Structure formats: C-alpha cells, structure tokens
Image 1 (cartoon, rainbow, N blue to C red):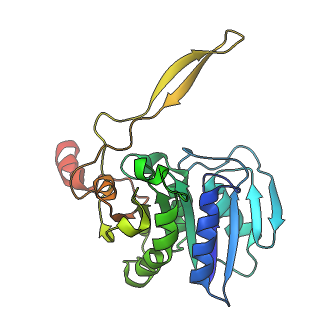
Image 2 (image 1 turned 180 degrees about the horizontal axis):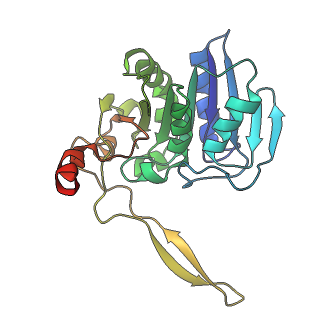
Length: 261
C-alpha cells in the first residue's frame, strides 16, 4: 500500500511523527509512506490553496518533502509532483495537536488536507488528538492516538462506507483527551456545535504603537450535544465522523423551491 501523509502543524510537529508510525504499520514492509507537509505551521487555514502565488517545495529526506503552503497545497504537490507512478491508495492527515471536532472542523487545515484528497477520489482520513487536563499530565500527550491509531484507521478502511460519487465521503477522527488505557473505544458521531463558543478577536498595541488583532479561541472542554463528536471525546471515546465537501443544505432544498420557484 502507498500512503501519502500531511498535517497542518508543520513538517517538524510531534503529531506527524505519530502519524508516520501509524502509516508505516498500515503500509507494511512492502508499502510506501510519502510525506508532504507544510514547512511552517498552517493551523486554521481550512481548505485554502495557494492559488495566487507559487510555493517552494524542498526534499527533506527519502519520501519526505516540505512545502511552503497549506495542507491542501501539500496534497496537491504530492499527487501531481512528488509521488511517481500514480496516486496513493490512502491519504492520512494529522495527527493534529488539539481537537478538530464541532465547529473546529470548518477551520481545520488537517481536515482540509483530507478534503482535498477526497475531491480527487482518494480515500482520506483526518486524525486529531484532543488535548485537556488529563493529557497534560502524560509523558506523551499523543499517547491515545499512538496506541489506538492503527486499529482505528484499519477499522475505517475495512468497515467504513466509501463512496465513488461526486464529493465522496472522507473521515474525521478525534482521539479523546484521556490516557490510552482509559479510552472506551470507537463511536460514530455527527459533527457537534459549541454554542456561544466561537472565535473572536482581541486588539493589542505593538511596541511601536501599531494596532493589531489577535484571534481568540474558546474553552475546548465544553461538550456538544449528547452523542456528537466533542461530547463523546470528553466521555473518553474516539469519534469517527463521515464528512463530505458538499456544503448544500439538502434538508431545506424542497422547501426553498416551493418558496422561490
């Protein structure tokens, strides 16, 4: 099996090392793991691509490349420049430091990398390690992802629903913020929503008197609705959420046609 991996935390991020180990075990002795990751951190860039300017790409080692671009850029670079002799069998993105559950999905470069692969018809999974008070006490905060990552990816590959239609399904996985021994298993979950917990901005003055805005986040330990991704993560479960890039609100199409047509 040939696997392409990327992330949004950057080529030197510890989570990418975890993902490399996961991918190598899944690929097997006769397989290949190719890395194309951002040269610098790209958290929060979503599915952005560097459409208006070129990106530098550099070979860092065997099957290991860094690109000055977003995770989606890195996937494009892997598919159309780096990998010889065709596309990979699987794209894995992560392991992100911090959760990409609930509304974070919409901002996540980790998810954006997996989305780009899905748009090219390649099976793709985004993986993130939820952080919290319990993981802060661990010697390895990625312990749960490291321990349960291979089994989780294999389970999705073997038993997941994979579609060949337009905007095909890809997967978003969040490992819970607990020690690996306390992980309760896998649960399929919809994307949740943290009410009144969105991003904002906070103004600051630089030493030269210029005004800048810092984007502010919100506490990540608030559960979403019962049974949704973040709520299950905080209960100790690995959440698996099927996603599509199609943003159409299909549930209101019929009513909107009645009103407008």
